[in-house]
Length: 635
Image (cartoon, rainbow, N blue to C red):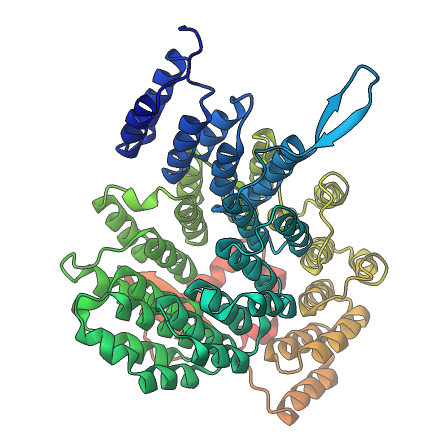
């Protein structure tokens, strides 16, 4: 390799021009190889350019590798890699803080040892830049790390950046997102009125609207603004949505004539963004009808994939899954005017999982195949597909999708574990959990819930205990009420009612049991005819959820199984006195690509009696003869 030499500015600018024209990481790697051969692998200026471009192309791993291989990174290179991490999700933002701490130690607390081993501290000329501090503050905001933000604030004052607009705005964002609006307002008020840019105003409005919960103050700032942009309007809509005042949001838009002005300018694409914010705002307030009215106001030619996704998500969250499928059909039948993206497909696949329809599942798979599976590359799509196949009863297909995924994360593993769990295949679920640990991934609390459910449904009591203790001791994950609910269910299904009760009364405190825990205990008491503990569980359950008719039915069924008819009558009388009615049971069966739905009491279908006979004999041939109570046989 050639000896180390300093390149001229012209040589460096030539490389910078090549970097700007790169469209993929392969080209960037070729340029990096050229720099290594040319003895420029330690050129901070060029490496910083490569780091920024690698990060922009989504290859944070290569960006970090380049930075780590520079022996003496300067402030510009540190800033490039810190900014790259700060623009990602939470784990990467944590790394941005770690990198800033390393930079601060290296440049601001350099120790010089003399012959007498005395130590002196000097300030480095390569101290953090304004963009270094604004980037690390952005990471603090994403992590809601107010304490770290306070520390960086002291560095802002130390390095004299307290008048830099980008740094001040970043500080505003940290305090606002952490709910510390008093500190944010003090910083904002210290900025001269003429120096407040639209981003600073928007940050304060967003803080009051979304984190401070004070739309009055947000509106006051909104009225004082000399200039507003799209973000201003979106934050006002989001704030009104969070406070349940969507009528005020729509009134504000109508009074200002915003939508009318935007619709007149056909070249302006901001109208569709505001419409989408309105749809999401109404949906978050539970007003699906108003959300649909807004969506229908958008001319068909102007609807984009974000607006379609907003209304589809709205229906999905309210459980109107048939309407989700209907909208997806409309979207795909528009002659390719708007193509679904991976977010659309994730919602639709999850809907198919909820409906459990093999016909819809195959239809969605056919659509994905028609797009050459380009929409199924993301891990969230893979996770949704696993969940869909599992809930539709095709575990082989679910596992096939799981194995085909090359970049599995904890969520993907948890989804596969849950799929095996709901079908009682606990051994396979634990095998997948073992694979997760072998891959060096660290399970989270949600993953352990799936593992405990798998143990519960498969009757693996000792294994369940083992993984529960491992969660606490090996991974330092504090058990939540949901983890304890799984343990109560595990013990209850196994007939260990007293041990399940001890979990609630002795082990759980100070964690408070929720309705799901008492419901699991009551279900176990009904199954194993432990009326005494069942009554106590029922009392707690009715106190926590007095409006849930299912709790009364579960308690009544326990008395019915024990043939305590007077108590059955008392529970049903209590339901009537409180105006409670049990919603009718519902079943559906798919025949010849059509879904037939039956409610309890339906007798109009000529095939219903034959279906009941077939299902009855099928249940009797399985392991459920004792669970078919005379009460249900006589329906």
